[in-house]
Image 1 (cartoon, rainbow, N blue to C red):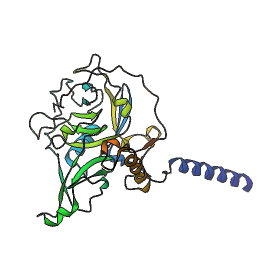
Image 2: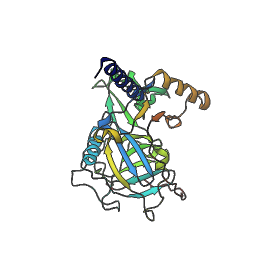
Image 3: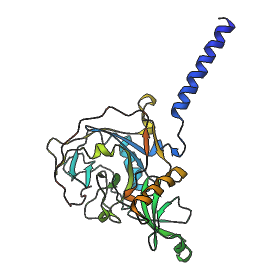
Image 4: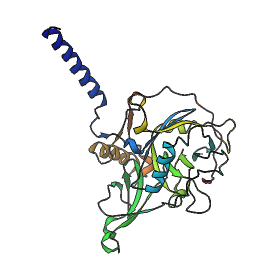
Length: 298
């Protein structure tokens, strides 16, 4: 092969590499979710991507990762879907009474943290801070209290805004197992009573299309659930989520503050996400009237 042809081939290869690299480059203010703590849930209504937060609920996050790697969730139905509230799944029996063979998980309703905890503050109602850790909406006692507590820490808890993933349980606070629910709307009554462990970063519209019922007639199901890290490169969603510690997100907060007032709710804020290779859009489903129930089951 002539030197000229070799140079042309090298130039083509370098150009292709640069094009591929630029396609995966993160936009300013955005970050990639942790692939080892991101669930890709393919359902009969479309794809849902959930980022888990081990720094908020470590045991619950580990349970979801473990069961996902066992392919435990493949084919499990959404057995309880309530309009404007939540969609519950994760029961292999499909009745709300089942779980995995693993031991139950203790409730992780609140957590203790020191002032270095990566909380992006959105509002400061009296005696507390409301903001985001990653994309998770949270509320915390003010950092100043840490100076007078025995452990030098303060208490925080996740807020049940739309898109939050919580662990279902029965009457015992330490009875979570395999079942979880995805919030279709906000519900503050769940805070400090159910473990929040993740947030839908893509596909909330899919969650809201799931068939309503307790159980639904011909329910929707999770066809496959995989960790982002475990998916073949060719099939892996290319997802970017805005870094809530970035100046770009501060601009989002400023816009909401201008629209809603100084003491707006964290549930008024949507953390922007980009999916560079979205799957085909699935069919829609009809909705039924709202209910005021609470998540139950294991």
